[in-house]
Length: 293
Image (tube, rainbow, N blue to C red; front, side, top):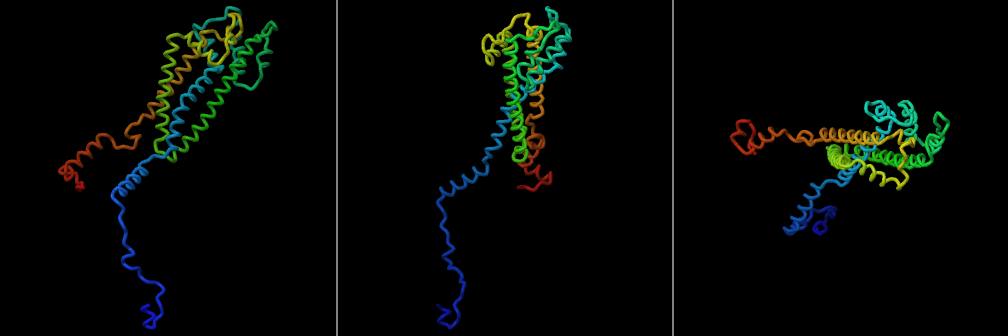
């Protein structure tokens, strides 16, 4: 308006009035609430790394157990058993070579994709069927359990690798924390199961079979081929070997992932104590050449 009265062109832009820049400060309670929310948001840890760490801790004992079972269910362990001193012989005519041959067929069947004919059509030196129908049926049930366990273990390994790749990029020390927790869980489980087995192996063995197999499908006569190839001592030694493999691996994992100060990214204890003392004593700070804060 002043420009129009003076005969000048009106200004396209004008400075805002001083009062337009005034701001009203929120109440103190609102300011404190907002600051608290900001602190919580800054200190909150993402949920995904925690989930992946829990998955590592849960999957680790299962994967270890499956791998140990696979290592024991092999011709190598069978050979060690049959030829070690003190292993009971067969009172019905099988020598160590016969056992190694027929036992390898039985173990191979558990991990291949062949049907029951793989064992059902095997014959001994006299041309008679090596395994009875009930034995073949039980081995088919065992194969179902074993392949299911191997499949679950393989799936857990894949998910575990994905979790490790994620934690490596998004969470410093996340892999170590997950493996450390998993090793503790594994040691607790293996010590508990080992104690139950030591207190009563026969009862432990029976209860284990009741979980996976129907009654009457897993008991055989002493002269049946499965008992002659895999006597009670074999299963006891297998349990000890599986437990030892899992225990040693979990113990090593616990040692290598133990949360030391260096692994947590903290200064050594002596250095941290010296720095704390220097911060608390101005004279020490002055002697060290550190300016007072």
